[in-house]
Image (cartoon, rainbow, N blue to C red; front, side, top):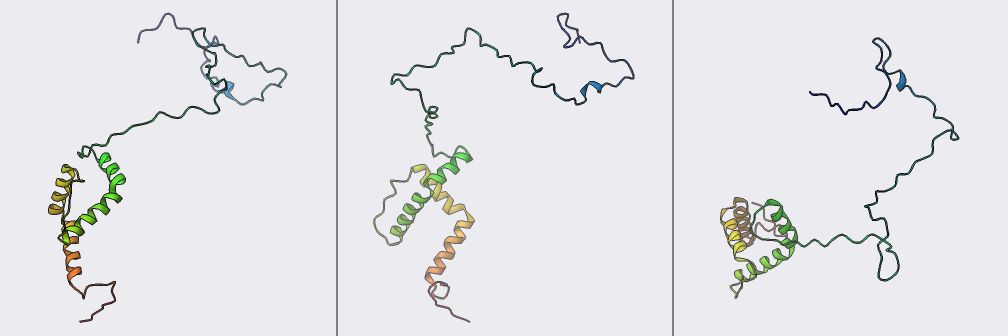
Length: 162
């Protein structure tokens, strides 16, 4: 390392002698009485800084700080990130579940149903999910079996022992 010729040591005290107590000056001492303490020196701002208060057209100073800027967010349902998927699920889960439930009930009753409200990409993902996901298949088959079998209904009071 090359020494800096412009370096000025922080203190002018000579280095400690070998064998002397290095931390002797760090021992705790009582502070001086308030009359002998130095006064606080306040620094002034550089002249380039604007220190004047902003002027308001209505003549009164603001009571509180201004609100944070409005954050506008666009959600693209293309599944690019996990966080976006979680956010979409939080926002649309309840209302979409009701619409989907109504659509499936309409399909079951063979009535005319429209799925235009579903984005084409989301609609395709739902169909893929329904065909591939094993847990969903198992629940669907269990629900179908429970609907058709009067013996497996645990809420209607029909309890049959074999």
